Image (cartoon, rainbow, N blue to C red; front, side, top):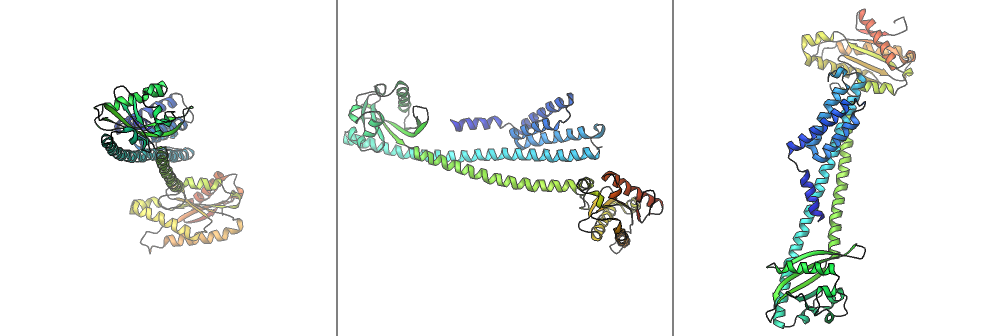
Length: 469
C-alpha cells in the first residue's frame, strides 16, 4: 500500500519539462507582482521562498527558471532607476550576495530533490527484489502444494498429512467452508486445544466476524484462480500494532470422493520481513550519509570559489574594488599608507596597440607591484587602469622606503624586453592617521595623485594637508 502511494506521489510530480517550466514562471510572476505592487522593501526573502518551492517540486528545470527570473528581478530592483546596468557600490555588493544566495539555494534544494528521487528508486529496486523472492517462494510453495495434493490423494488421509507439516495447514470444503482437517499449529492459532476441535466448524464459528469475513473473501479469490493464490497479511495485537507477518498460500483441489476442497498453508515470515526491511533501510541510510557528505564537500568548494570570484579581479588576480572595501573595513587605517596608482596615458596604449596589449600591460603592472611590495601589503585593482596598495603597519618614517619601491616599479614598467610598450604610473600617497575614515583616506590619496598628474605624471606625491611633497 505504502509503495503504491509513493509511486502515485512521484507520478503526480512527473510533469513534462515545458509544463514544469511554465508553472515555475507563473509562480515567480505572481510573487514578483506581489512584492512589486506592495512595494516590499526586501523582496528577496519572498522570492527565495518561490525559488525553493520550484526547485523542490520541479527539480533543476523549475529551479533554474526560478533562479533566472529572480536574478533579473534583483538586477531590476537594485539598479539605479531600474536600468538593469547601473549600480551603486553598495547595491552591486547586494547583487553579488543575492546571486550567491540564489545559486546556493537553487543547487542545494535541487540536489536534495535528486537525492530523494534516487532514494525512492533504490527502495523500488529493493522492493522489486523482494517481489522476485516472493515469486520464487510462491513457485516453491506451489510445487510443495502440488506434492501435498498428490500425497493426499495417494494416502487418502488429509489429517495425517497436515499433522506433519511445520507451518499452519488446513483443508476445508470449498462450498460449505467447513474445516475438514488441520494440524496442531493451526488449531492453536484458532484458539483450540487440538485439531479435532477445529474439524467440522466454519470460520464464523471459530473467529470473530471481521476475521471470518476476511478469511472467506480470501477463499473466494482462491476459488476463482486456476493456479495457486498467495498473499501476505499483517496480524495486529489488540492495540492495532502489527506483531506478525504471514504468507498464506491457498490452492483448490478435488479429494478422493470428488469433493472440491481448499488446501491452505500459513508461513510466519515475520523475521524474514523485518530482516529485509532493515536491510533496505540500512542501504538507504548509507546512501543518504554518502550523498550528504558529497553534498557538503561540493558546496564548501563551490562557496569558496564564488567567494574568491566576488573579491578578486579576473584579469590580474588582485583584489577588486569590492575586495578593497572589505579589506579596508577590517583594518585599523591609522597604521597604513594608501597608494593610489594610475597608469599614465593608458587610453593611448589601447588606441595604438589594441585592448589585448592593454590587458597584458595591466597584468604586467599587477606582477611588478606584487614583486616590489610585501606579502602583507594588500594590492588591488579598483578600476580600469587604477590600482591601490595598502601598506600595513607603516608610519611617516617609511616614506623613504615607499619612494624607493615606487622608483623601482616605474623602472621595471619602462623596460621593454618583454616586447610590451613602456608604461609609467603616477602615485598619490596618504597616511591613515590623518583621515577620518577609509573613504576620506582614498580621497586624500586620489587628490595627491591628480595633483601629480597636473605637474607632469610619472612619479609619486604625498598628501600633506595643504602642502604637497
